[in-house]
Image (cartoon, rainbow, N blue to C red; front, top):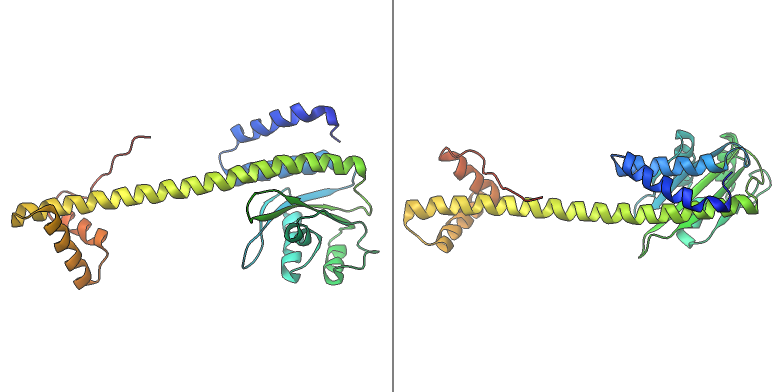
Amino acid sequence: MDSPSTGTQAALQLYDLILDSTDISEFLDELVTATARSISGHAGRVWCAVLLVRPKRPITVASSAPEAEALDEVQYNFDDGPCLTAAREDRLVYLEDTLEETRWPDYRAAATEAGVRSALGVPLDLGGDAAAALDVYSDRPHAFDASTLEVIHRHTLELSTALRLAVRLAHHRETETNLRAALASRTEINLAAGILMGRHQCSQDQAVEMLRAASSHRNVKLRDLAGELVRSVGQGAPNTHFVD
């Protein structure tokens, strides 16, 4: 199990994971797997996952093993459990023994049948209204002592940072994709307007208005109509050039 003196090494491993991963989800899986590995043995056999609360249904965004994802699904099916409670109420929730605990009876029965004897839900700080938790499962009762909880706490700080970065990257990628689509659409419309200006000896505003009128009359998107016009004069699909 990790010791407090390995904080710098853990940070270096975190950066190594970022460099080695080609996909954010792969990186998160590797980080969660590292969390499970760091406490396995001392706390028995351990599975870890990260759940994200969404309006319709929670989702597991990372897991160390299929068993962890399946155990999360059990909570989603009952819409209750220690890890969901941790995420929703933003507090640590410890189920010390599935055979002794009285909360979440349906979930406990299913978890016990799956070989789980203790579970831990640790909220992750994503900022804003987002709610998530690190889910830690063990095949031993009372698996998580004070030293194990300290290690888990350090890993939750790393996971929180990684998830915030992942959310931010996803937002930037979506914004970039939308911007590129908007610029590509403008390129097609400008080319089509230029064709109409040449044909009808009109201004750009008049040409764009012609396109809009035709788009409305034919019930076709303006960009699609513009692209159709550009291709009809043998120019092929227009290219939009970006500087990366």
